[in-house]
Length: 224
Image (cartoon, rainbow, N blue to C red; front, side, top):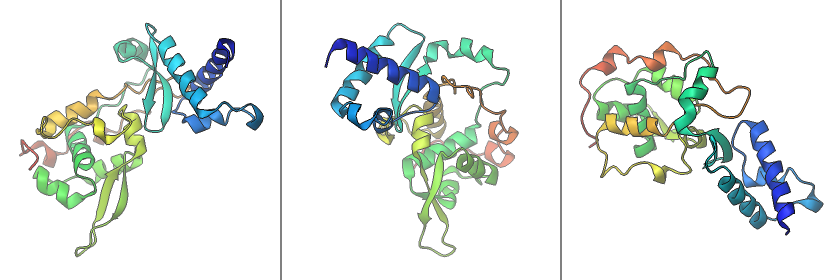
């Protein structure tokens, strides 16, 4: 395939990613073309590599996440771009991040098991927020009295925290402190700034950014 054809495909893909404002998989990108002119997967992979290289030295990058590829502002420029939006990026409480970290590492896990590890009650507001953000989902019920729901992370969780798989989480052998794990997950946030009309998130729920009183005490130091 000629270089001119590759550049043309690259421009189409770039335009689609800019317009989508969300990750697009290779299959979705291939579906942009008529069946007769659809590039083979190997060609599309080459196009993505070329597009990634073309972003070097620019204020945005091509990022591969669990759902596919997206164009996003580089972390080092996010604080300037954020000033374009009146609403501040959402900040999440330590309790919420620790709960999310436990689900990520111990999934599937029940609310009671999370509470046993953390030593405090997990507020309903935290569980609701994680479900509404689609970062976790119910994957079944533990076969014990009461049949409590078991939670696991989702593809949206991986997308939001800039990961392609859970293998990118820091090993527990290296990071055992719950608060450190929460910070490590938060560090992977892209800043919620993408190329889309809805780049600014909705105002944060006060319950998402303030620890519940019950969560402010007796935080355990390690995961056992």
